[in-house]
Image 1 (cartoon, rainbow, N blue to C red):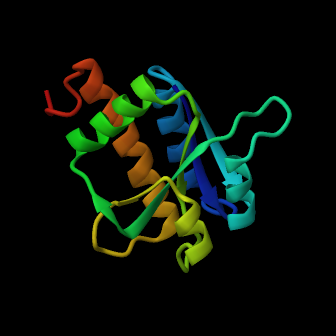
Image 2: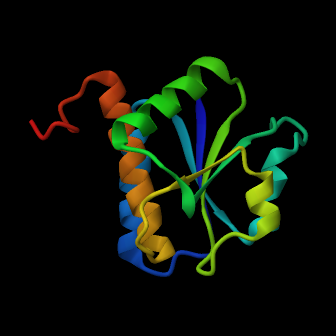
Length: 147
């Protein structure tokens, strides 16, 4: 599976950059992954299109109004995508004021990381940790169980 984690906006905090890089490296042990800083929602929507050698991507938004999944359910979602969909997957964290209606309609799925509002840079780290956790669940690694 080819996976991208996308976020809108520049990363200002060095600690957020360090954590992002650390989790991308960890996830990279399990699948091909790339972090993508996007200028705006239009840049995200371009991933739906095939351009040159880049295939069209399946876009999944992280948004408070989406479907809530447990860590195990999220792992199963990633496994199902890997098993049944050849499209690369982009998991996207929106801008500080949330995604537009147009972007929501363009998404293949919308997943909630909980009902609380998170700063978008913090939401990125939570998503990266959950993606890492999902792969450890799928591989039977003890990270998820705390052993």
